Length: 409
Image 1 (cartoon, rainbow, N blue to C red):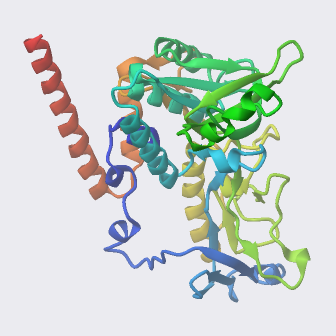
Image 2 (tube, rainbow, N blue to C red; image 1 turned 180 degrees about the vertical axis):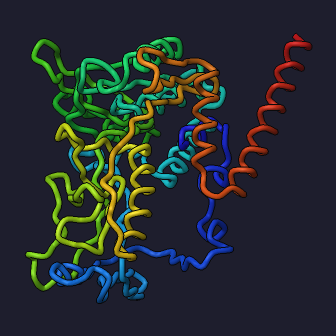
């Protein structure tokens, strides 16, 4: 629910509670640290009972070394910005809580600088998958007439893998919010340019070099677009803020091994390859879930890197971890597609449940259903209760404010 942080619907404590609070009354030891490297030993146990011997050692950047019997890799992923020149320098990713807070800070800064000015705030979103579309709709609603949002996608449509109902709803909302769609284009380069740059090839401009150098020249970000097809021409897009939602890479730790033959098996994208029980191949004491893992479905296709898949995998991994420790049979993971949902602003959304073919909820009903689904997924009953009361209070207050506004108008 990072989009709701930008729209002001939720507070950070509601969607990102601290581990120290969640684990306060448990026996879980929590280390706030980063993994430096991993030294697995469970490859030595291939021909031994999986309940005997150590599993390996995790080395943290603080210098702490944690010896483990069993390991679950659930490190998620980060944005992949190194595929386009200038992206890592001039574009902001939107993948983590830290990313969302940084984007919100940048938007506040632009809103403050452009206050009472005629020039609109220009925001460009690269990518029109779920993340890009939800981000474009949220920011467009937030800025209103003060901003212009453009969304770029290499495909000729948005949400190419989404249910048709979700795609149609998203197109309708983006159109109503005047989001400009640049479809069929890839970003070839991102750079920063200064307004008032001098064309040194023109002799008439040489005399004005000194004045231009000393003048105040606001900066702008330039995106060079190339058509993904052959019938279109390239374009140049100017922007105050570029948000990147294309591509990701798993955050698997480096390995400290003398024999490279026992490295964690990875696919071409860097995900750990697992068997159907979510154990990493060749490492009976190591499980991997979520964006860190690669598992194919019954049709041979890799499962999508979504929160729905990761949550279902966590249940199976927890059971299989207990089963492996106690010598019980492990269960093969089977993904149950429950449908897809998205937010499109404070009062709009789209939900396509898998158990009702061809039906898509939209508007406030879909938006509310999505929030309830996320509320159910929040950790611990205590935290769910706190957040539920908080959202109920906010909803009641918003309703009263709307009633007062209508009464005074």
